[in-house]
Structures are given as structure tokens and as C-alpha cells.
Image (tube, rainbow, N blue to C red; front, top):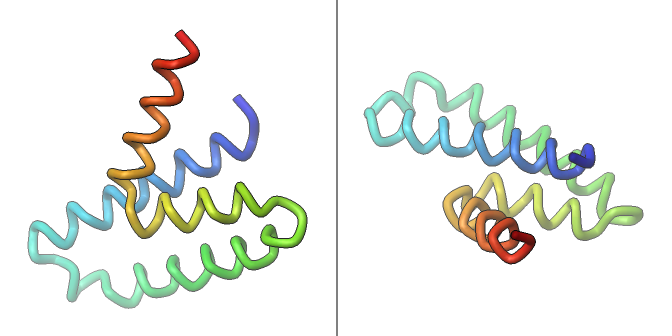
Length: 81
């Protein structure tokens, strides 16, 4: 697995955790932490934009829409098989 795939999966899993926190009503308690994570991920994506635009886009998608990201990744995996 390439480092980009691993990074996108990590961001995706973190975003799914964030969604679980919201669903449980704990988002107010974790709001500052999630905000800091969002800023750091956006800074990382901005840095990667020049050299790795697809990775930057994948990181942004995985964070903002983790379910969509997971669905596309699963579809790509099924095509490979």
C-alpha cells in the first residue's frame, strides 16, 4: 500500500470518528480538537497541492465526506478484483 493510500484511509477513519462524535452529541466537547485537526489537514492538503494534486483532493474528500470517499475506494477495490 502506498503512503498516499494509507494517509487517505487514516483521514477517512478520523472523519468517521468525528461523525460518530457528532451523532452522539459530544461534538461541543471535542469542537476545538476537531477544528485543529481540520486546519492541520487543510494545511497538509495545501502543501501537497503543487506536487500531489490527486492526494490533496483525496485528503479533502476523505475529511469532508468520509462515507463518499470510502464508497469510491471500495468500488475501485472491487474493480481490481
